[in-house]
Image 1: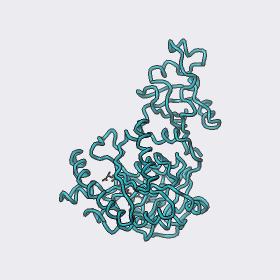
Image 2: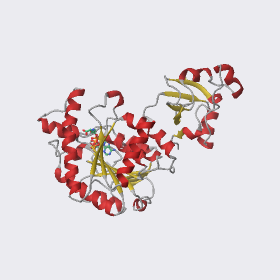
Image 3: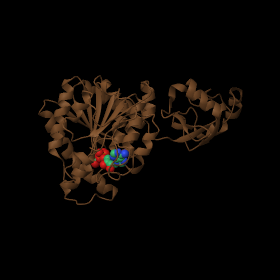
Image 4: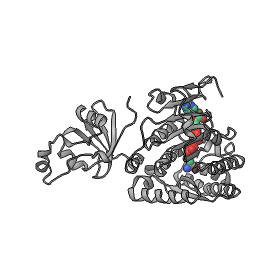
Length: 388
Ligand SMILES: Nc1ncnc2c1ncn2[C@@H]1O[C@H](COP(=O)(O)OP(=O)(O)O)[C@@H](O)[C@H]1O
Ligand SMILES: N[C@@H](CCC(=O)OP(=O)(O)O)C(=O)O
C-alpha cells in the first residue's frame, strides 16, 4: 500500500454497500494462479469461505473466475502462453476442468453447490440467448447455487471474444441485475497512475464514474497473466453502472477482502454510478457490446435526447455509417463526435440512408412504404452516462 489514499468524492458510498444483496465477484488470472504455476488452492479456499460467509448474510453471489489458460498451461507443462488460437483454446479446455473442480470441492465444504457457466459474446448480445442465460442464472441464484462463470474460450473466436473477464464480469452484472461488481486483482485498487510505473502513485478510495479524471489514470499495462489491465476494469465499472451497479476494485489477497467490503470498510476503490436503475430492456441494450453502426445527429437532436429523454427522429439524423439491419445496436453521435447514447435502430442502413433529415411527411415518399416515426425509440435508447 502506498501513500495516503485520495477520495474524489466525499466518502459516502461505502455505507450503502452494507445494503447490497446480489454481487458479482471476479477474480483475475493474476490472482487465481500461484505465480503462473497452476492454481493457488489456498486463495481459492479462502474466497470460497468468504463467499459462504457472504451468503450467510443473505447475499447471492456469482463468481467470475479467470485462470483456465494458466491452469491449462501448468497441466500441459507449457512454459509459455500458447500463441495459436487452438493452442489457447486447448489450454483453456484443459485448465477449465481444474478450475471448476477446485471451486466445486471448496464450496462443497460449506454445503454449497456450484455450477459451471461458460458464456460467449453471443450469449449476451442476442436477445433470445440473453433471456435464457438470465433465466438460468436467476434460477441458480434463487436455488442457493453459486454460479462459477468464465468465457467459453474453446468456441470463442476472435470476432466474438470478450477477451478479458472484467468485461464478462460487468455483463454478468447486467444479466443478473446485480447491485455490486467486485473486481479482485493484484493491486490495492485503482491508483492515480499505474503503480508498476509510478511508485508513489496514490490509491483512489472513492470516485463517481462521471469523473473525467478517471480515464487518464487507468493504464493498459497489466501483469504477466492478466489480459486487460486497469483500463478494462474501469470500462467494466461503466458497463456495470449502466444497470445501476457500483464497482469495487480491491486486492484479492487482502485478508477477508470480500467481508470487509460487505461491512463498508474503506478497502480498494469504490466506483459509483451517477444515474439510477434502468428497465430490464435497457439493461439488455446496455449489455450489448457489438455496435453495428453509427448514426450522426444534429445539435438539436442531441440536446433533446440528452435533456428530455426523447426518441431520435429521422429529421435530426445527418449521416449514418456502417452496415446494420433493423433491430441492430447503433451508436448515436453528436456533431462534436461525442457519444449521445446507443440504441436499437428501427431502420437498417439502406432505408436509414434514404430518410436522413426527413420530416414525418416525407417518410412514405422516401421509403416507398410507411415507416416508423422514430429512428430509435426512447424505450430502446440508453443515454451515455459519461456526460459532464
Ligand atoms: N492506475 C492504475 N492503478 C492500478 N493498476 C494499474 C493502473 N494502470 C494500470 N494498472 C495495471 O493493471 C494491472 C491489473 O490488471 P491485470 O493484470 O489485467 O489483472 P487481472 O488479471 O486481475 O485482471 C496491475 O497489476 C497494474 O500494473
Ligand atoms: N477466460 C480466460 C481469462 C481471461 C483473462 O485472462 O482475464 P483477466 O486476467 O481476468 O483479465 C481464462 O480463464 O484463462
